[in-house]
Length: 431
Image 1 (cartoon, rainbow, N blue to C red):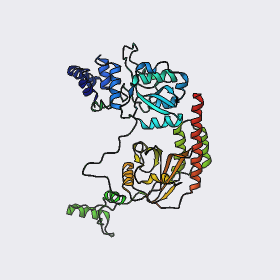
Image 2: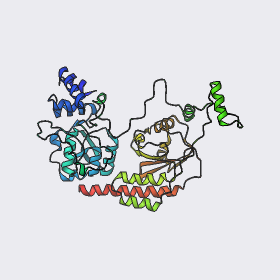
Image 3: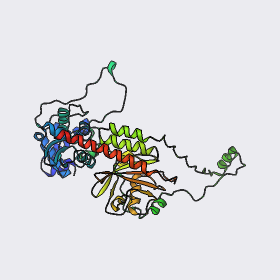
Image 4: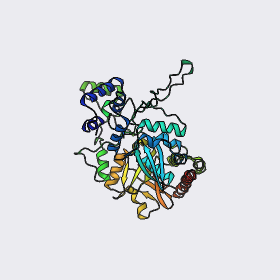
């Protein structure tokens, strides 16, 4: 439900106040919540009540983010707190209470649970309080524009413009975030969807009612074939200029024969020793995963990683031909139906072979926006004998020779040790 409709339904504001806030937003830009607070029609706790309602989680008021013990803050690394806009607020037994801008961020929840070994209890908090807490506890500055709320006397904070002599070279502009966790320059039509990540790509387009999910891979492939049955070719002996003149005289233009572009050559294969060096120096799970992807992408045309949860696998990132890392993050494969990813549940150590002709696999490649390959390689990365991550790799339509499975087992064993070291480091800080 949109913020304006929710506030009207709860009797928190009037139609006139909403109209004035929308007018202010249309003139100055930013988010509707910012305009409502600036004009005095909305307080922070009411905004938090709305965020809790639409996210189906509990609200962490400002006082919950004050005076958090140092050992609790140490449970979450600063880089992850800044990236996901999260602040640990308490540890009770084996449960970590976490204030978040987006309590529906499954990737953030999974990573923090993985690194701490604790069960996560998510709370929603306003962007303003999250940013202030991160800056105070971790001593880092985040690029965000905030406004005073709940009687706070702090003025609007806008980065100082550099003088011409000290201006930095032009680079990518960082998005300024509002109280509801979205860029201040976002479209007005998106004003009340606070849990859409500003860093993620749009989810794969939904299937229309008259376009059901392919029932098999064969049906998927057939739907992708839009090449005409035959291409008329000009006589081989006719000069090109004469051919163009004839086309102009008849009013018919001959379509040239499509020629497939040669496949992109693979980069120089990374060595296992280089990958091991990167894994040893890794300080976050992202760095561990990047080392795995770099090694695999130098030997396959496509490589991706998927995080294993209890009832599904979630896309993490990928590299290679036609792969969008941000799109992969929106891929979800349930484990309650036959698919590529159930091999390890059946006791398999790895899978290498053709893609089974199953509806779930058709859906998977539709979401990946890539054609099914000739062969696919899947191996699990295990932590304490349980699959935590699945490595995916393929060479597109090329069959090629079978990969050296043993080298990937060694790679994933090294990566598993690196992840366990990260977990132990975080546990040391909590003792």
